[in-house]
Image (cartoon, rainbow over all chains, first blue to last red; front, side):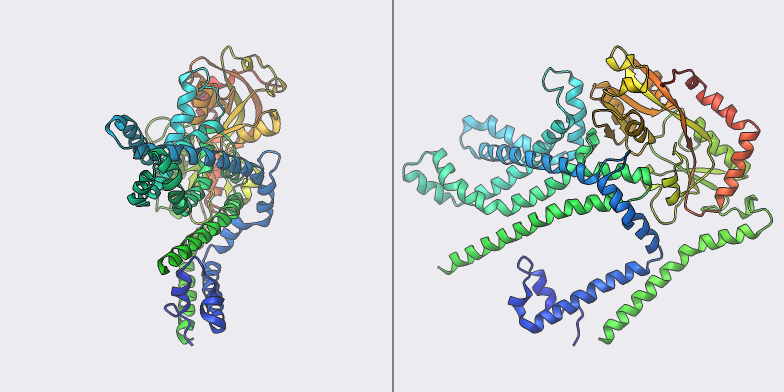
Length: 295
Length: 279
């Protein structure tokens, strides 16, 4: 029996989202897939273990002493897990604002009629601008620019507020495009039918188009939020101590990168459930569509 | 199955091959140590043949570094050049981000000189040369702000502090000042300076020469609130077990006993000695 790539398990596992071997290729399949999994990871482990610098890397990245100390912090270094709470907070707050602002932008962009041209132009300009500028530059401009202006209210916010503002501005531009794709994917006949039933343009959008559009774009939306969750780390350039920064402080003081491993782990245990959830939604959507096609 | 075995065997072989070249420099270094004078220019185990490759971060700040990045002057620039001169080698400058200086694996420089404070924890990961400068922490604030009135460490407690990530200034704030508000930590001194100018932080802590440099040339209307007695020493960073450390230490030792270090301090750092000390 040849296990190497190209055998059954590879295509089936790459077809992805479901990945439940048992249902797909029976008892023998499980055996093959687990054997190939073991061999695959054993090979990687072997190569890593035999690399000339492996003991050094193990000490510099995976020393349990440093993993533990960075996780809970020391007198002079903040706790990475404590700092991670800030990431979660920023993520949750930004997410709410992004969902709202992006929807507004997407809808404005779709309003027909010459009178509304300036609004459409602003919406297009906004998405072009903020999708084109790297987040870190937006962070600098808002985080150091707004306070520098010396305005009464806008210049005296905390760095976390500026950071969340930058996240909202940049991510809303992406998410607006996702919404727009969803809205465009709803066939025009739906709007026409709704209008012929006496709904206003707005009502047709609100009750007929958006419910279908949003349902379709939930997976890509969640995908963007996984990105958002990670990008909260960039706010550290403005001064707040979030998980990646806390890890950096520890690493620089102890000359050990174990803290980065800890921070990475924290991000992963939040994003993996989100990713699996996205997979399940995609799967459900596909099932539904297949069922629809069978009619 | 046989195919698989072949794959494994070749991978093992590959890993085995990879091991050899990286061992070479250290073994040739060991050979050098066996000679009569291990620190003679010919037998020095430098990364590049017959050249002393020295790294520092970018941007590099006065008074530590001045002039052109190809031939740094400034205190650290000239200390390194003087070391090279005494080892009878030409010096070549390269850029190395601070965070990468302690990464595992072979380096492409002989040592890194970048105001790195010697600590026991850091010494476990890399090797330090002997100290070439005794450093104290300086506190920079804006004139006519409440923090400017501070006379002692305890007066500083209730102010918002900022520092650059990775510096012992940050550790100093947390362990000695112990402020009530969480310190704001920035990627670079430049960012911390922006925050100070915007009043996002009340005071910025750096090593004293940098504090004075910032006061005189970077931040208008600023003053040095005080310095905290020297408790730290700067050392050059070497890859662990690099035999070159002894030779550099010998050179530094000479430079200290014949007054070269003091002369360089007077040349580049003398303005920085007349600052009030914080109790």
